[in-house]
Image (cartoon, rainbow, N blue to C red):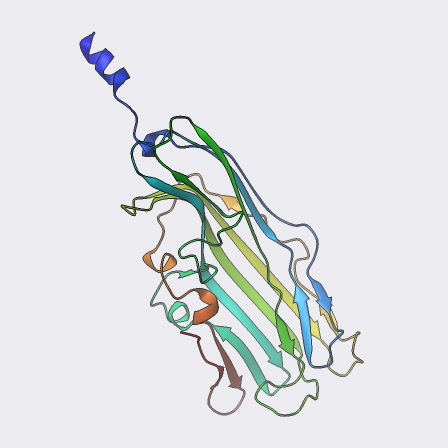
Length: 262
């Protein structure tokens, strides 16, 4: 009986006691919207990816501080805009493109490794005596501008003929001990956003672009078995700072239009 009693009395660790009560994720059902109101650029806005979790945090012993929230990484990116027979512009992540890394941080660029620090995270500062219940949520979508004219030209003559985008992400619900950096992966979500817009540059502004994607996106997948977070998903640079805009002409050498920010 002494052994049973000792097992019962032994306090559970934070790792064993934190509970994910609920996880919900979706991509909005609305299709990508296209905005042709500007004579220099076409803009489009994709539906939002959303993730929401409710977490029960046990009492924190001692002076420990734990942050619970969302970390996201981009695993794959195809993002190119074709200009008839002239060539294409392409936003690229060179290290990801070349297979040097398997994922890159999609942090907000300030609060590494977190996706953000408003609704996306919560922090528990010990010692605490009671369980705490927290909700953390995040959302993500694309809202870029694409020039009607060839980006390396001084001309604004519309030549844009199609936009193609296919990106994949992994999103983790994570608890991190701020002092020891102990990291607990609580949930793993995979999601993808695809887009294809056909453009007729000969038509008048406001009537050029047609959405040709699967109008409803694939819904995100909550994995039954958690995946580890790659090292590059936790540190600088993030995808926004690492991406490069290339011009790849049909004839001639590629040109860097916008270099990386880091």
